Structures are given as C-alpha cells and as structure tokens.
Image (cartoon, rainbow, N blue to C red; front, top):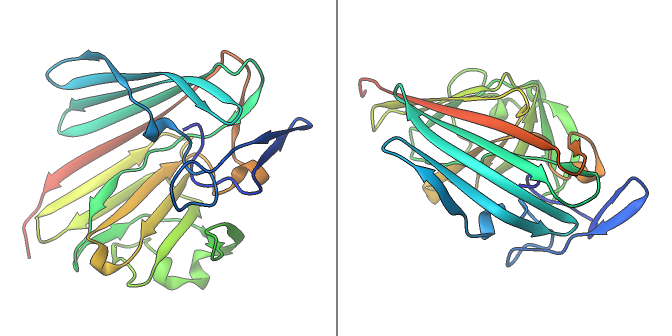
Amino acid sequence: MPWSNRISSGGFTFEGRFHAVEPNFPGEPFPIHGDGFQKPWRVAAHGATEAELVLDEGAIGPYRYRACVTYVLRDGALEARLTVENRAGIRLPYGLGFHPWFPRNARTMLRARAERVWLEDARHLPTGVASVAEHPWWDFSQASLLPADWVNNAFVGWDRRAAIRQPEQGIVLELSASPELDVYILYSPSPDAGFFCFEPVSHPVDAHHGEGLTVLDDGETISVTMRLDWAVVETD
C-alpha cells in the first residue's frame, strides 16, 4: 500500500498534476510497493486468535494515509483484511494487495486459473498483455509445477481463487480474495530460491500509467480481504 509493485517515470500525473515519487528500496530504480512494508505498525488490539495493527502516518510521494490490517484465525483458516483511508487532502488513485511468501521445493504445485498475462521488460515494467494460451508454461488452470525460469508477471481474468499444493509436507493451501483483488502477481526467481510469492492485488504493474487503481477522495477508504484455508492430505 498505497499501491502494488512499481511506478515508472519518476511519478505519475493525476487530474492534470504531476506527483513525484522517489525510489524507496535499495537496488530498485523505481518506487515499489509503497511504504506500508517499511513503517512500524502499532498493535491496536489482540486476542488469542486475532490481532489488529494500525499504521497511523503512511507517507510516500503525495500519499498521506492511515491503514489498518486485521488477522483472524477462524475455522481452520487465516483471514486478513486491509483498509486504507486517504488523508492527503486531495483525490488520489490507490491500490492495495497482499504479498505472502510461500516455500518452494521441487514438487510445489500451483493452481490459479487466469485468462491473460502481462509480459515484462528487463526493468520489470509491462510491455503488453497476452493470452495465457500463448504461454502454456504459465497456464495454471490445472495444478502445475512452477516454471524453472524467472517469473515476475501479473495475471488477469482471475477468479480470485488459487491452490498451492506441497506434497512433501502433505499440505494443500486454498487462497481466496475479495472482488477488488482481481489481479495476481506470481514472483518466482528460480527453483533454488526456496520460495515464491503469490500476490493478490487490485491492479497490474505500473497502473499509475495505465488503469486499475481506485480513486479516493480525502477521507474515503478502501478495503480488501484474503483468506488462507489449509488442509492436511496424504503424502505421495
């Protein structure tokens, strides 16, 4: 928050005004993922199975905002709800998402049906969208092994449901997301990395120069949710 992934061109123009946004992470030429992951959050409430965290003063580029995230363990699942309130004093376009990291081994499988995939250039910026059918190695309509090559792509035409199967651990994780999170980003640097990221988000990469963001007036809010259900299955 207050956006997912990268913003190119040193910032963005909105309603006739250019807003500069500086890079915010070492080694990244573009600002990435906003500042929510870089700020301390306070624990506003907690119990045996839930916690509420608050970021009172989010501030990056033109953005000034308050954010709240709640985590609840219920019925064998983890539910997360993220809410952001625009406090910039002006209208601004916002984007939200979740960025969970998952273990990856040689048998990890992903199912996440999508219709189209955004291609990227060497700067990790989008170059165009293509049908997943044209790139079958990114077709996860059926549970499939993750590709051996670098993956860092946004997928659209997603039904907001995914499954991650970990045969060696005997676990299947079912992920579901709220309607606002109609894009997922799959980040998997290599089979040897030991992890991959499956990110339900509200817009494609560099949407400040495209589309998919939600405009909030000063004082308005937006909320998104994600649920992770897990089940134990027989190892094979």
